[in-house]
Every structure is written in structure tokens, then in C-alpha cells.
Length: 317
Image (tube, rainbow, N blue to C red; front, top):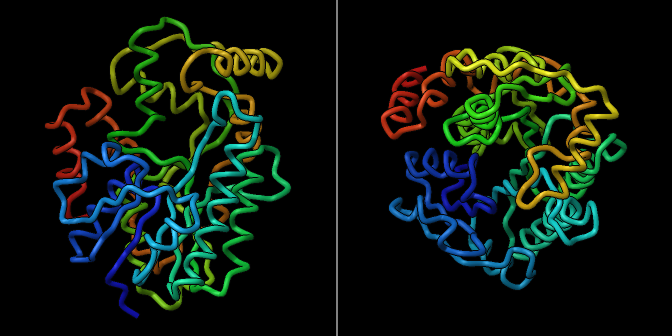
């Protein structure tokens, strides 16, 4: 079935921005929910509808999804909000919101839902993040909708907060105290994530499926930090922290102003390898790009020219 009118929740962020571009290129009618139009200012030149909506309000949410052919939920958080009970933000974003989205879709006759989760999502997982992601998946599976769930490993690309952070730290610090240096990841390029979603949007065989997304290689966290140093030509000395000091470091970051670099819950999440359990499903239609192909272009500058070169380097893949 062809889905033309696409309603995206959480579409102004890193993954969503790339997905919106991909959908527009296909001629889809895209509407985007955002708390403040300013948050989606980088997308307003595209032929899409940016609608200020409180997606946690069932009335506003129902109005937003009405007459859509498909809804895509990309909302996710890695950290709780300061001043809220520890874990409350995970439950709100990963469980409460998907439950409300399901209800809105069912109430307005929207039959197709694509939901973004994460590798390792498990209601019995070691972290609040993974447990809430698992509970969110249960809410989606329990619906009467034609659902598809995506579970990516860590996602990289020009605007990521993962590799860019490691590069930034090595530009300013001679030593990096590194927690969980042996944690495993299989980073996937953001454009490949967007392509996978687009490729199964209209695929009936994808209904009820859960797809893992990862790149061609598995790395430890320490290897990724070292790679970023290689890319920018600045190598900080890596100090491998034992678990006790790692948790103390994470606690100190949680208490500092702003979004923490790492939290205790992040440490718990990293106990589960963020790697594929098997090969990528062929119907996703992607040949994942490697970090080595993409990351050097943006880690060395992040300029508009660098971003153009990134897209040019992967054109025609």
C-alpha cells in the first residue's frame, strides 16, 4: 500500500531531519510536530507542514495524526531531565508517548505506524533506558496497527553527538578518563537509517517486523575514541576507568549544569553490546556506509563544504 501523507513525531532532531529530506525527495506529503516552530527552523524551507503541537496532549496529538496515511515516531532521550524523578523522562518519552500515539492512530483510523527503538531494548534490561524502550515496544506490538519497529545501534553523521564529542574532547584535553572502554557498538550512518525507513514504509511484508540497524563493523568505545583522534590528528591519552570510578565520574556529570556527557544509566546501557544479532534484512535495501568513509569528512571541520562532501562521497551507493 502506498502511504502519501506522513506525520512525523520527533522529526526535527538528528535522524528526523535526514528522514524528512528523504521523504520530500520521494514526493511525500510530510507534516512535522514540534513543541516550538523554532526547533524545526532548519527544515522550514522544505515543502512540509511544521505544526506546533504538544504531542503529550491526546487532543492535540489526535488532531495532528488525523488524515495521515502513516505516522513515524522518532522521539527518544538518553538522559533524564534535571529536577524530575530519576527515570521519569524515560517513561514519559519511551512508554507514555508511544501508548498515546497508538491510541491516537487507532482513534483516527491511521493504520500504519513506524516506531524507533534501540538495539538491546528489553523490559528486563539493565538500564532504565533499555527497559523503557522495551516497554514502549510492547505498547506498539499490542496495537491493532500495521507496525514496524527499528532498533539502531548508535547513529553517526555530520550532526551527531557521539563521534563529534570524542573529537571535540581530544581537541581540548590531553587526557580522557574513559568509562566502559570495552563497550561494543556497531555504528550506523544516519542516511542509511533514513533510507531503511523509507524503503519499508510502503512494504506490506514489513508489518509486524522489528529490524536492527548497524554498520559494517563493530568497535569498542576505546577504538572509537582513538579513531576520532586519528581523524583529527589529535590524540589524547586514554585513561581506562574501573567501574567504581566510572560511576563516580557519571554522577559528577549528572550534577553539573547542562546535559551530561555520560550518566550512570548510560553505563548500565553499555553493559549490553549495541551490535546486530544477525545480518541486515535484505528488504531494508541498504549497504551500510562505514565510519571510515563518512566520519573524516565532518570530524575535521563540520563546515557546509564538509557536509556537501559527505553527501557527495556517498552518492550513488
